[in-house]
Amino acid sequence: MSYNSFLNKPENALRRATELHAIAQPQAALSLLHEILSSRRHKTWSPTYEKIIIFYLDLCLDLGRAREAKDGLHQYRNLSQSQAPGSLEGVIRHLIEKAEKKCRDAKEMAEKGDYTPKTDVKVENGETPKEQTAEDDDMDLYNGNPQSILLSTMSTDPEKAQRETAMLFPALKFLWEVYRAVLDILKSNSKLERLYHGAAVAALRFCAEYKRRVEFRRLCDMMRMHMGNLTKYGGVNVARFEDGGKNNKVRGWEGWTAESIELHLQTRFAQLDTSTTLRLYTEGFRTVEDIFNILQISKTRRKIPGS
Image 1 (cartoon, rainbow, N blue to C red):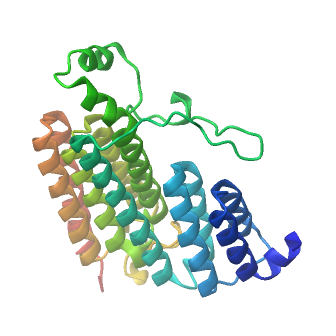
Image 2: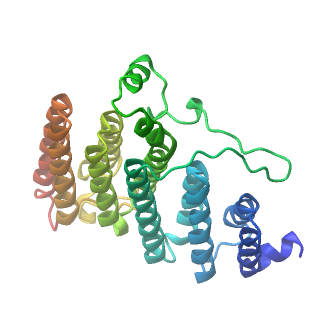
Image 3: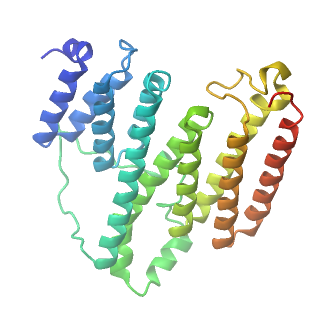
């Protein structure tokens, strides 16, 4: 079957990817689906594309390809956010739930000791899978700094530490990348604002549960930047009064509403609780400043007629 037939009929691509996965060639299936999602030939959403992206994300999860998952989400966002926002929401929820489940399962297996190191590496198409290096990401889950090496040697259960390194850390890395990608995709989408804040609160729980202090700081900086952009380019200060506080400077953002302000406040209070749990009090003080800024937005919004 020719490549053009896959582009003209995405159902053929999905069927072929399923066949490749059945014969233990998940990387080939992933590459095929990525080509379909990134193709500019099709601009119309259909339920088939939802099936494609779900299968694609499941492959990314199995292979631990966080970067490809992020790119696929961006491609599907461009395809579906105006035609089928409900489908985009369902896909994102599916990915978060599967990634969180994989993380919980990895944690349970690491604690129980149900792990056997792999001695062979599967080779596909004559190429060995490319290992991710520290340059691929800026997260400290794999940083071999002297402190982490020293702590690992002082562990009361070296075998458990080895299991966590082999099983839990890759799952944590993937889940963290999922949270970052989802927040980046939904940062200015008013229609899916509840989903954005739901993902933000889930990411905060992730930081608290797994004691990820570095990731928590980066998460706070990310959400602070998102809110700053909305305030600067999509806030009430730059909007015309007759628009009720709305403007078109930020794509997908319909302006500050009472519900959006309430959601931001709830997320910041959860962020404040997490900073207390992790004993990051400086970040807690910065969160209090964020809450004050949100209250100022609410105060400014009440001065706009019709808001």
